[in-house]
Image 1 (tube, rainbow, N blue to C red):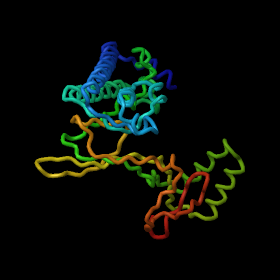
Image 2 (cartoon, helix red, strand yellow):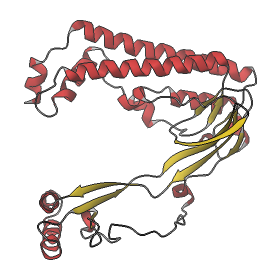
Image 3 (cartoon, helix red, strand yellow):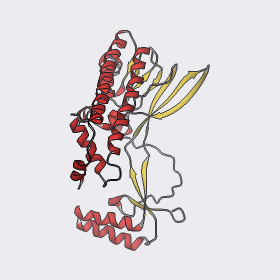
Image 4 (tube, rainbow, N blue to C red):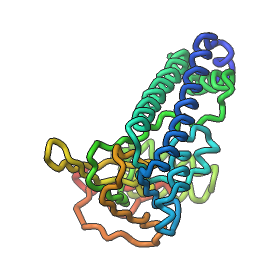
Length: 299
């Protein structure tokens, strides 16, 4: 069915051309950023990339800067898989900052072009948008792109950055509410993996849960890197926090005060958490599906 959709929904030639131009603009901006960043290092703009090396001196090196920028401008699936630096701070000149901002605008334009192509299959069967997009990417010769990386904005920190510290959010999860029937359907789906496991899950559901009961699936997410930072604005210190993915750009020559913390997973530490009342029972009713019950009265 999806192949027939791709055959019947044609992508106009001018839209393929627009996609190619948008991609080429991405490549051009990325190459320009790499060149200007190298120039910045020669002009003594500082850098700190903690994931680059376990040796502190190397984290301040030209090689660390180069790797952070290469990772920041990666566009393909291969680039993503070889990515080394998920954090760091790169001090940059005004010219380099302008190119980063231009690159971010180019990324936004590229995303708009992708959305236009996806919209051609609007109202068609499920999955048809992705099928038409794959066809367009192949026509443009860019089917190996990692679209999430093509969209990802490079964060530019505010001027007069005073401090930055990296921390890890270790307790976040995705919560999905389920009806009893949806939970049963998920348990039935275990049959492809293990017939006995499916039967056990179904038996527990029917014995412990009511047909009108709302359940919840709690999926623990990987630790998320965040940055806490402060900057000077109109003579006053402003403090903010944000999620981080990759190195950030600092609009200054010298590094601010910094504090880096390794991922607790790599340190094999168990984080200490304050106990707080939860609306979800701590133990799952179906371990294999991460399905929990709500505490009575909290559904």
